[in-house]
Image 1 (cartoon, one colour):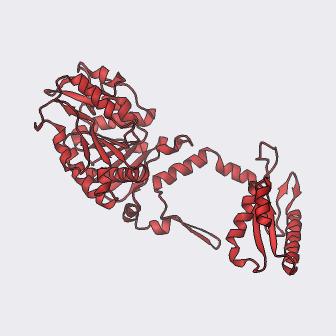
Image 2: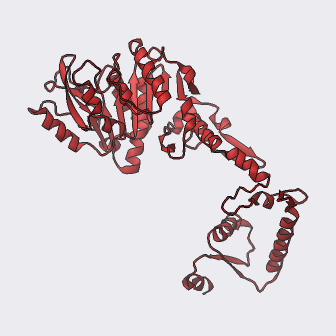
Image 3: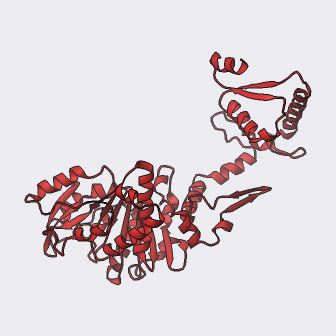
Length: 431
């Protein structure tokens, strides 16, 4: 779970959602978005239309977005209690819940059958009593059922004067992303309780007194204003982004990321936003190694992602294995031998010992012999075509080196690369 605190959490949430929906349309030709109602929803939807203009979510792209409801009050069409009234500002394909059906259970089943297999983004709110969607706390009669049911869509009894229809936990937690938007000091205690417990557990859990605990914290971003975050113990989190009016916190448990959980890393914002929020990005995201300058400021990468990847490398022991390689230790456990790549790149006169023997002189003896052979080939006018025969790295390595240095090749000599054991490949090269 990632926490983002800002002066305008609705706008921050909208930017995140717009980026994800735009990416889904670009990658798969369609996007799906499930939305909740409540006091913050209208601000989110207005901001989403604006954010869409900056992320490619306009016109035909919006037409490819399906918008569904997370929950709805059972009330007549047009009634002020209906969350569906808030959706009209979204220029997408709207799919309101059928809460006016005579048989609500049949309506819920029909809605479940029409849902996308997996939502790209699900938007949720949170109440001061800890409810989210229409997963309601005890002593509501349907509190336990809403959290434990395997139904994709279900109906629950009256809450604040209206019966409800809601998505089940499997649908919400099956989404690629979940965003929780909350504002105001009244929600601060329950937010702190949920967020801090989620940080410790690292997973959703069942608590009929705190229904929001049913949200999977992985791939979940919580957008708060300062009041809603006022009780949160931020010492349990690392400040990953500090852009004045916007702070992003990632839990210390994010350092426990594994290769399998890499997809749970939040996708960084649009490059335009990354540069706007970090004026020094072009200088910070540059690596200099000798004469080689690598500018990765235009990569889809931000500080939280980089921190998590570095933490993964640290937990996997990359630094220790690197040092072991430079020390000539036997890190090739399959063949129980050292890895000599370091020696191949060391200048003459340096030293690299493997099993007590300095191998650098032998490396340069071979390199000198290769240089002599290459000079003899270039000086022999009868040689016009060189064919490299190899498989795997013996093919790809020389081919890559040749392509990289093509500008410096000898004009008379043509180079070809054969890696197929069948005769057709070499026959076509030698023809």
